[in-house]
Image 1 (tube, protein in one colour):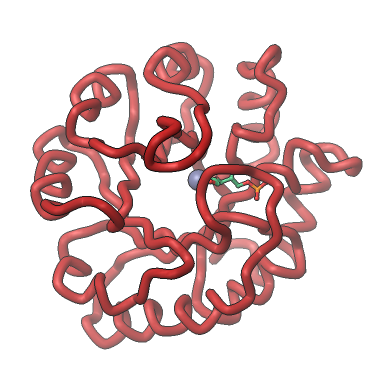
Image 2 (cartoon, helix red, strand yellow):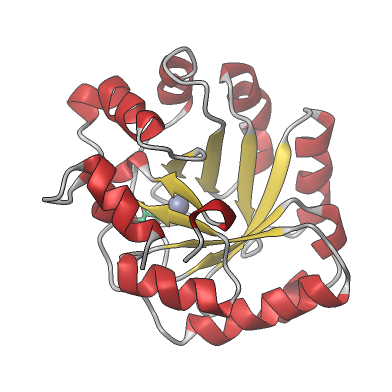
Length: 220
Ligand code: DX5
Ligand code: ZN
């Protein structure tokens, strides 16, 4: 891969929460493009993770954009609070949102970037109507809810499809992939058209250490 065209968004879900500030500083120093923060409500996904206090605590620790992946039932209800805490980008799910465009508008009114995530079972076609309104598409390459799962290879065709849709519409929308990203799957996703890689376990839990692990993800 050509380093300059790909971006890494380390997911702090796999970090050591007792040393969270230092973990974030380490990935910033090693060249991360943004910090990926997984917010889970135990309802939209079967797990609980972190919320606004974590964003507020991390805001002074790093200059990197804080990208908040909202795996929650009612994202609109918490966006004001999360924006005030220092979120730069909201990623919301297509699934379960009956008024997705309202959520997109809300993020824009707050002056934030907006991404839309689609689960492995969701078709790329659902993005057609709103693609021109968003900054990024997050193709979930595992079912959301947990870190350290295996990359689902059947999502590669969907990454290609999203890439094609963005090219046809001549948009600048980014394609980000999330779940099971290791050097091999990052390379496959890149060939399919992804340019941003979310990686938790393969960054924070790697025996190589953070800088070498990040280097490995970008040079496969
Ligand atoms: C899964 C989360 C991911 C997760 C990725 O629901 O959205 O961001 O942290 O973890 P790894 O890289 O360990 O698969
Ligand atoms: Zn995520």
